[in-house]
Length: 108
Image (cartoon, rainbow, N blue to C red; front, top):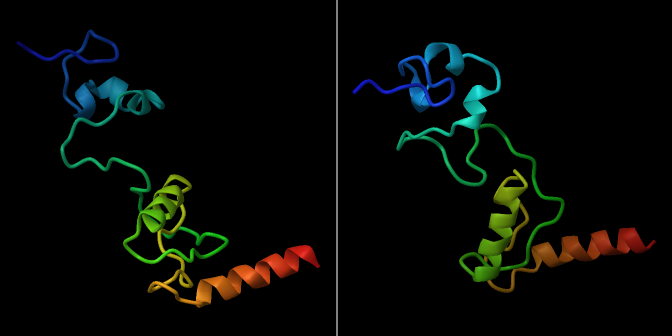
């Protein structure tokens, strides 16, 4: 059985995503049909390039559920997962001092 294009349903498949040549190169059609490759990039934050840092570091220690939640939120917002001033150990004072300074700047 010859596979038929998922989009036009007339031509035979000869491109990835189960599409024919015409549909694959038609703008917007590829976006409607996700990749079926096991090597395709999937998930939040799975992109190439330099991501901007979050506006504030987190005081949560590495490996904690809170830190993982912060990282998941950053990935959803397409930000860098790690901030240079994130806490590096439990009780690290660096992020707290930055957060304190930003709160003072907002108040005054």
